[in-house]
Amino acid sequence: MTTTAPRPIRARDRVLPHPPYRLPVLGDVWDLHVTDSSQWGMRGAQRYGGIYEREILGARITYVSDPELLREINDDALWSKFLGVPIRDLRSVAGDGLFTAHNSEPNWARAHAILAPSFTAPAMRGYHATMRRCVGELVEHWTARAGEWVDVPGDTNKVALEVIGRTGFGFDFESFTRTEAHPVVSAMLRALTYINRSAYSHPLVERTAFRRQRAQHLADVALVNGTIDEVIAARRAAGAGGYGDLLDRMLTVADPETGETLDEKNIRNQILTFLAAGHETSAGVMAFALHYLAVHPDIAARARSEIAEVWTGDELDFEQVAKLRYVRRIVDESLRLWPTAPGYFRKAKADTLLGGRYPFERNEWVFIVLLQLHRDPLWGGDPESFDPDRFLPERVRARHPELYRPFGVGMRACIGRQFAYHEIVLVLATVLREFDLTADPDYALRVRETITLKPEGLRLKLSRR
Ligand code: MNH
Image (cartoon, rainbow, N blue to C red; front, top):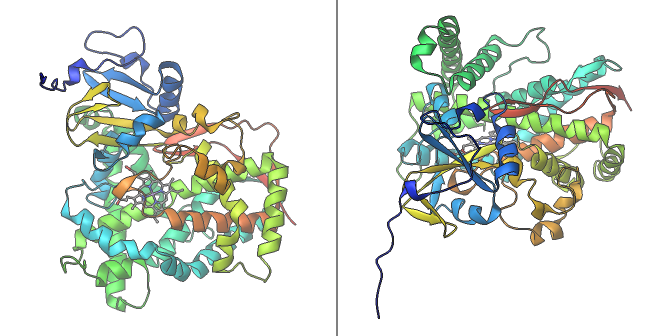
């Protein structure tokens, strides 16, 4: 009997499909798209396959959308969350908040333990009335504009921001009463746009060519931080404890494991994290879903008959939201075609031979191309078609387990998933019940990327039913 020593895992032995015409030093730089990087990542997967790479100035970006490879990559025992460039750069504003914390930072586990109960069903019940009031403001806003074209992604952004601001921290951005956005909102938006653009830039370039934008960025960050510190101080002064929201828990609850509470700076980071992570993504889903409902009257009609059956009183109750199974499938199908967080990064925990074929050294990372995974041939039929019944329970059970991952995976998966479903279903059900939707016949769906995805320029006409 002979034993052979295992072959060492070496990154340089990894051979992957990549764009043609690779240049010395520059690599595949000519093939990099910064303004639509996720859609470009999907195009690449369609050309080069379920695993491929681009090499940029010696750095390798590996794109994965093969569900079989994801069995390994999505397993926390083998791979873990990685803060890819766009996420790492968010640390300049969100620091060690839940989303941007490194796996090893003690504040992650502490904040996760303290905040997880805020996203359970009983907690959601406590937010329901506040959520409903925010949706009421959207209905009022659209009622006043009946028969006009309304800016759908702009307005869903407002409602989602109000929902997280008020349920999370008791903060009212007055989105529907102001003529211009709240200064904090403009500052946050500019900050995110700046971060997204400068993600692949060099500090020296930012200090010279982008000097003015960088100064604006620093002022924006200061304004946002200052406002949040005021919110925290006001709650402390009013006496935390009776509000039952995220801020209350952060100010009063200790980690059951260690007995430690969150420090002041970390609380600010968490608030920023929840404001940013907790509204853009949900707002985008609402907007995509309204687009599909407007162009598929048959689907809207089926949803309306379910809504009529479930929503029997004046107001939609907490328990009734969970009974809107078809509306929920519309949300799932919108998130399939346009996962508004279009991907996530994972890094290898140890040297590994991915899929038995591709050597990755410890800490090497990959990007998961959700746009392509969610269009994999395993979905069957025409993956581009909008069909909520793909999410019928029996079809979900029969499908490959790694085929649908809009909220990420493992211990670092989205903490706000149930919260998002609840608010989105509530918005869609209310809008469908109150309004008829008319699509713009000249509109062709274009998707804009600013870390998250939005249907660019989507407008609808709404009239009261
Ligand atoms: Mn959310 C993490 C998608 C709504 C708060 N969210 C993630 C991740 C994805 C994601 C994907 C994992 C990222 C990664 O692996 O790097 N989130 C969504 C989508 C929606 C969404 C598609 C809406 C639809 N998220 C929300 C809402 C909140 C929220 C609403 C808060 C109220 N999400 C978070 C936080 C994290 C996260 C916080 C980080 C969790 C952690 O790492 O512990």
